Length: 193
Image (cartoon, rainbow, N blue to C red; front, side, top):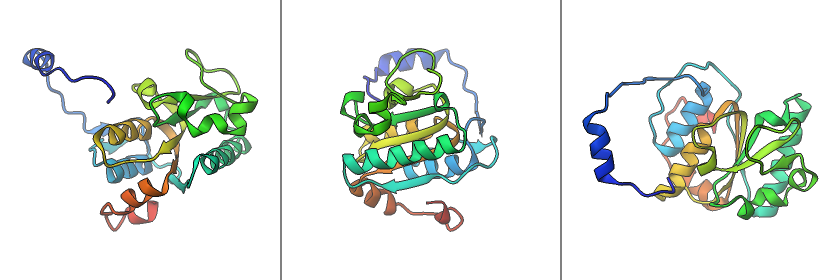
């Protein structure tokens, strides 16, 4: 995603690797699986985590709007009695410091923090997609979705979208919104967006 691919190393590992087909996605709900597949084109298997809430997409014309909508989302999760320690805000920026999330009220008040290690009770975590790869959270909010067509941006979006166990919210720039809207939708999934 953000590193360097070494073909020789890959070939060496592939020579002694066992290939196993993993057709089932045990982390993500059906809604997250469908939206991830439609948006990124990645085949992430058949959802086995069951049904969940609809994926929420919000258009964010600028960083200020993104921060405001993120604050509203975090407030809504708190009203649903979600422990903020089970919430990850994933930025598609390369560095947390460049994220629109750092201008949010939640970040300024300490309810959202960029921390490493174990979750802090009552505090949502702000993290880059690269740093969150391989991890998960109950609820994921994705910010700084400015581009979805270039390979690095799509890889970061894929990682961010596949981290939630329960709910997924995305704050998307008008440019990325247009790119996503131009993707073909299946008739049964078109109502999810």
